[in-house]
Length: 306
Image (cartoon, rainbow, N blue to C red):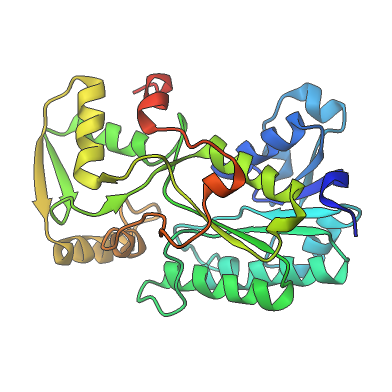
């Protein structure tokens, strides 16, 4: 196995997604050969100079297919699993991606004698959760630990960045509606983390062998209520909207009815997530332990195109 400082090639599963693409960019800037493992490598969009120089290598992989997983990581010394599924469609289920897919990657990392495995989960991952999404995340972590015990697990809070689907969605709602429906009373506490800070954390743990086998919860420098985040968006855009509390029972009914749509505006898993605070536990390792200074939402908002 290679020492952390000798890592030269990293396979990033889910490397074309919001977080995965940011990780790929950060690794390539650091001089690492980075394979972007995705089901549609022909659709990956990175600076052509990096691809031509071999710094970024798009490759095919479906985490549900262990053979393709093995081929994607063969010859590399490190792996990052940044695959995320938030809406189930057909055979793309939470169990297939966050459980089986996570296991396939961890198992092949062990089989191929991979040096480092970074598994990206999320704050609140819980095997016993009533949410199928949160439960699959929790089981995925256990399967990874069982197959590859030195894996480092990163649990980010809700991600933000100029092209995110979180703050941009909030802004879009305030753009076309005079009312903004809140989850419950809007009191759920969130600790949004900047996507580039999570990418930096992934690089830090790759470079630090002492992070093996540890779990880090990643959050930004400030904790906001959901209502406060909406008010922040309204203040930034100069809009005035009526914030309307909506009981979670109503949200659950709406999400159930919307589940028949190809792209539902809200899912039962999203509703379940918003019932609980999503903040870094004081007892957990965090960005501070990786010497990553967290970035505040207010510092990045000027770069959004609302």
